[in-house]
Length: 179
Image (cartoon, rainbow, N blue to C red):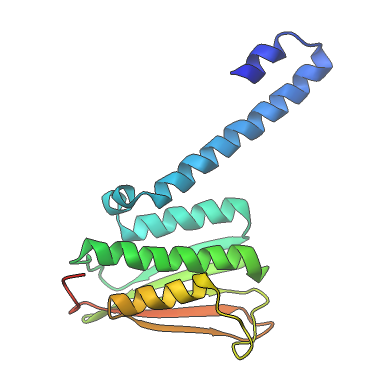
């Protein structure tokens, strides 16, 4: 609003700069709204697991990636425990965050493969990767692993320098029901 008010008090050449600044502010607000939705557990539960991941990938694609895609295989099985749904989503969010910060990747892909007894999740990037033997596990990597263990999920993170990173998760449908 302040930019629009100021825009009325300046010459034509300066008005164009105000319009550009106003567009940046609008876009920034849109991004903040999308980010805040992805941080709100109720929104995630309301729109669903797959849609939440898809929204997050869309947001990231606008920011950084050439492609950021979700592929769903099999018949979708809803989570019995909604807390587990949030935990799995947060693990993926951490992977996405690490990819944005460190990977220099151009592409990010997630596959959700619903089987009869489990959900297999594979998230990959095509970034610079890292040496698994020498990487210092920061809080993000440790959080992903401990969250997976908390809900009895299999967890494997693999990377090779120059070849990107792959996260593999297995969520058993017969699981701890009381977290």
